[in-house]
Image (tube, rainbow, N blue to C red):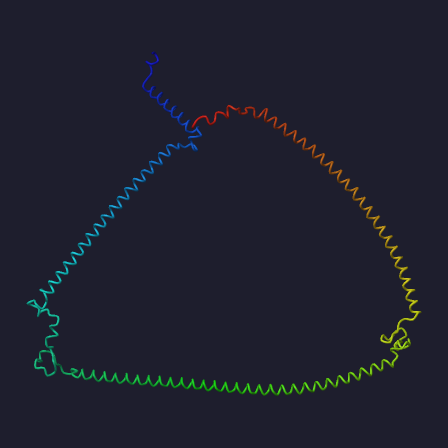
Length: 381
């Protein structure tokens, strides 16, 4: 009771506002933290209501515009019909007025028609009919000294002169055209004569070629007969020469077994190839002796080559052993270097671990707990 006496109206309003904000926050939590109702933190029901309201407004606006367009079209059609009716009425009225004017208000029916008759001057006499017109007077200024009274005859003479000039030009043009046609005909005849001359020359050339071809064929035939005669004669001479050569071979030392025939007159070490009958036993023995010497020389060279190969093999084995020793030394040095690197890495790892322990124990003492992480995502703000 005592507390209620000291509560002010402002306190009640503030408590009501706090309670209202608390309820609004609880409702917001239910909308946001409820996975079934929220879609990325948006009130789908309110959005659906807004979309429906917007669609309804758009439909009403579309219906209002459609009605407005229909009314506008109806009024436009009515105005167009009215304009057509007025145009038709105005046209009929004008036709009736024109018909009345044609029947009852013609110009020749007026009293003063002779004053504005367009053909009045055509109907009246001219001011001067001729030089002998009695209406002409001195003060009328219709006849003067030096006036060209023969203007009409002069113009007729000028027209006749122009006509004669035109006829002369026409005759000259016709004559020039006839000359041109004659020139073209002459040129065509000259071209035809040249064509005929060309054809005659071509025919003469063909005849000359035929005669030359016939003479050439006769000459070739005569030449072929002469060559055939010479070939037969040469064949007979070749057969006689071959028979003489065969007889000479049969009677010469070529087919005999005389070894002296193969000796050349240029030296004792030379022979006549076509008369050579083969080697003598002494020459065969000499060749066999030379072959035996060559075989001994070949065996000696092979033995020397085997000795050289053994020496090279020994040198290669020594080189391989040296390379193997060097590889072992290099591998041992590599293992020693790897061991040094491993000890250095262990030392660096221990140093890094000591630094991490120092940071965890000395520098980063206030590490966050689960309470620090659980305070997030508890309100909607």
